[in-house]
Length: 74
Image (cartoon, rainbow, N blue to C red; front, side):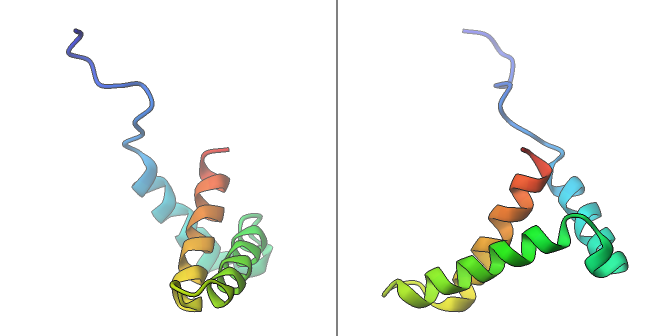
């Protein structure tokens, strides 16, 4: 077996996400990632409100996280 790390791991995700969130905070709704992340957060909050185990704040964070990840790694 090879000693290389698998090619699917992405070690630059956290720095990229940090930069994206900082840019979104500075530019507000003018940043191209802000609206999709807000839509993802809203969808997650609604889903969290509907599901019996997950509350809406957890759904909101999860939805925003998934949308941000999709913006960073399409």
